[in-house]
Image (cartoon, rainbow, N blue to C red; front, side, top):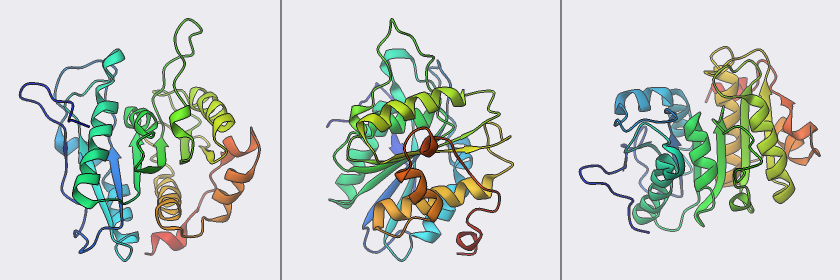
Length: 254
């Protein structure tokens, strides 16, 4: 696929987070948040900072497995309606990872608007998993086409959302997960009770959950018991799984 380019603007992959593996056997592409409408170019520093903790933890956990972790730098700060610029850039980033590393599994992990971009671009054949943290999703509208879910068939999908999120509606991510679960049983969703959009109160737990999920999806590590239970449980149980305080303490010592 050719890169979705605009005059003077291209998406790009940031440097690998942490040391670059000698042999890459899997890749995580981190997709930052953004705005609903904006033609401005995003700040590279802000994009890297927003996902810095997750990127560093993934790089450490996946070092022995040959995991390459990159932040995707968009062309535009906004989603921009039907143009869906971040989703286009996410799809380009998967192609770029394949060009660099060959036939390795790719996980798309996004925050806010980046979560929506990850879900949209998850249909690429190289993508085997998607992590959407507090994803920004549109309001339900019977007159409009619903958010697509069929592209996620065959992928493992984790959605995490704070119940007190005032910026992205957690009920919309639940409804999306419920539709996705009908097409693909490998979908789970965790709720972080009393936490907001930034998930700052339980950042360690959310990061540990994402690392646990990515290592299992990309490299076949055993999922933690809560993730296994969430994937196996029928809706709505597996889509409203509470994230327990203290989750992943052993992972944080890695």
